[in-house]
Length: 73
Image (cartoon, rainbow, N blue to C red; front, side):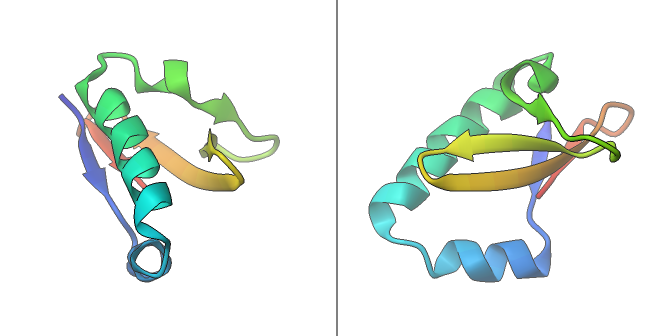
C-alpha cells in the first residue's frame, strides 16, 4: 500500500476546495493508495518524472517513489 503525501502548497490549495471536489479527489487517491501499480491511474508528463491525475476540471501533479511506496502531490 502506498502512502499519499501532500506538499504544503498542495495541502493549502486542497483545503480551499469545495467539499464535493475534495471528496472526488480523496476517492481517486484511495484507489491509487491501494494499488500495487499507481502509475496505472496516472498519465505521464513530458520532460519530467512526475505524472498527472485528472479529477473533473482539476489536475493533480503526482511524483511516485516505488522504493519508499510514496506518492507526493
